[in-house]
Length: 302
Image 1 (cartoon, rainbow, N blue to C red):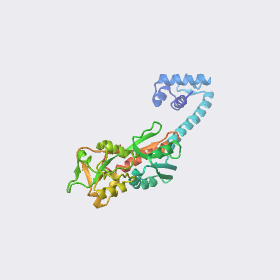
Image 2 (tube, rainbow, N blue to C red):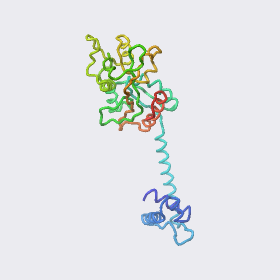
Image 3 (cartoon, helix red, strand yellow):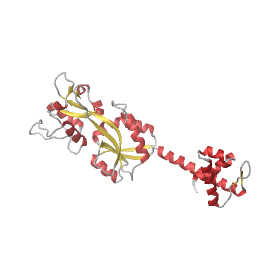
């Protein structure tokens, strides 16, 4: 017995015809008739008097139809409830985000998300990528925002957007662009080890060793703000995400350079661990955040 068989006998009762009921249920008359007969055999009850024209429900069949109506109604209510749950964004959500994304992304997404979902209590924690991944596995976070790809087989990610990177630094007066080969010969200040953005820049710029820094200086920053100050002090260069450029002063905006022969961007994704994930909220946030970010950067939606 299945829900379709119950829907079939209700349709036959409604239209008093197997052919009309089959059209209504979008199946062939032979299929519907066979399924109704199988149900009657399973219940050991004749539901319809097929000799009558139009078809008549038997006395025993009437009781079966009443119960079938209740079962089908409950089944439809269950499906509706399931859809409601999937569309529901409420309750307490714990989200981690790495600092190099948080400083520029949070001002864009926090207020719109809280206004859209007034029943949502959102807890935000700035953590490193490794700590974020650990907290997801331990159920301390429901989701995380980080730069991908990540080296993990058990955590899943949903790409939200690509964020272009731009060069910031001191270059030839009047020049607003630089080639990748020219960039590789400059003093380039990078985030400290452990930041995936650092590794991406090193690979893209083909930096074997930053030998252009002062020989008696070894300094790697954990923030873009510190990188900017080092670049200004030593007349060097660095690469910054596009959203972060919105925070620069008008004077510093003049130091942003285009790359003549290529482009580089970072992936920003939602990360989650399926056993603890609030799946409906993960899916909704991935869409909402992508739409909000795409209003601020020059790219097509992911």
